[in-house]
Image (cartoon, rainbow, N blue to C red):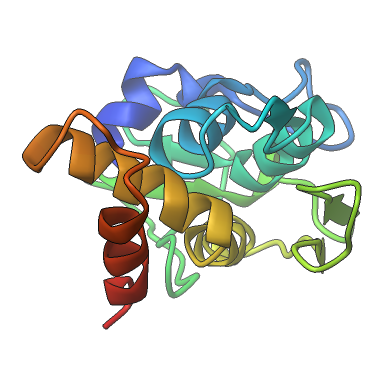
Length: 178
């Protein structure tokens, strides 16, 4: 979901910019949706699974992601998001990475649980691909909170209204990644 063209357009990420000369702060909508609805969930046991600082850091990583709509300003360098290769003439609705809208070289730390450093992620942003957000997405997808949150949703949808039933939850979490 994090690199979906539909999500980029629907959540207005196409205007998200970061760095020197940026008119706006990065759009936090996709970062918030990703953390709250698709991975960690809002809270567990009364404690938040992420902070507003984590949302801001992920939004910085997502700045520059875009969908070419045929009318973006000239003078920008469009890159293929995974390889970083320059795209001289993007196709309509092609997902692109705009390096001028992404500040490289910033040190970011996502501290998902302030009581421990086990899930912390520190990175320095790059300038030519969407590696920053993919690094965060992979890290978050493999966190225990994500496994628990997603498995509860799957249990609730497919098996039982009691998504906290210990045996089902333990079995589902054990199957994660196999």
